[in-house]
Length: 232
Image 1 (cartoon, rainbow, N blue to C red):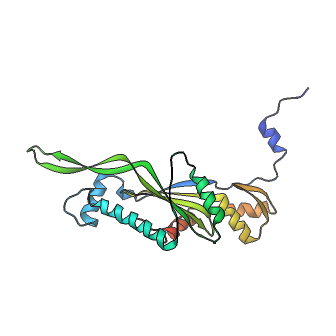
Image 2 (cartoon, one colour):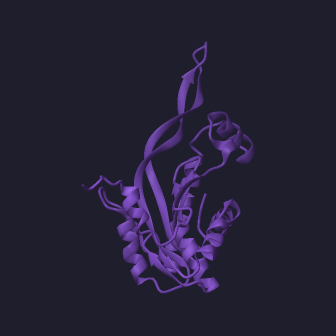
Image 3 (cartoon, rainbow, N blue to C red):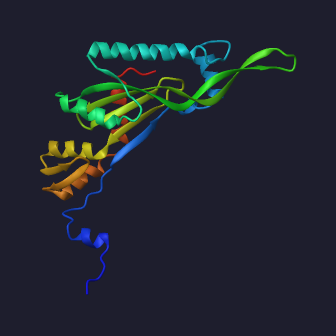
């Protein structure tokens, strides 16, 4: 009689080694003080030096950001790609990555319309009937800019910005890509998977490398590329 076996039982007989490593990370990048209407009012009054709190002057920042992106693309010969509905962004990234020959750089810049939180100005009236502007938080479909890049230490990643205030962003990276590059630098032999390791000459040393990926290294990656890329 054959006893039923669990998936874990079957896999346990074929595991070559075990490794704990950060997989894909999708991180929020934002300025906490600019996430509510009163903060925007303070920004307009104190940072921009304007007497009336309104979202209108923020449009100039958005326009300047878009102009800076196109200028950057022209100067560096980087393609600007409009993503279409149903298109897998990773597929586009792999097409550009297959042709990329440098150690690091920008693969392409993508643009997509996505819903996000924004501020807008409403016209309200006081008890005497006089109108005044009032800033509220809402959502809207706006352009988002994707910078698909290759980093010497982290490999492929992307940084995505909203084109509207408060210009929140997202950073997406892969810990396995980072670990593979660090293992190669350390001379540790391994067989790579698309997202992981199939085998390695030194599992213990590889685990030590994986354990070193933490907030400080990720923050350094973000700040390195913020210094290179246009942003609001």
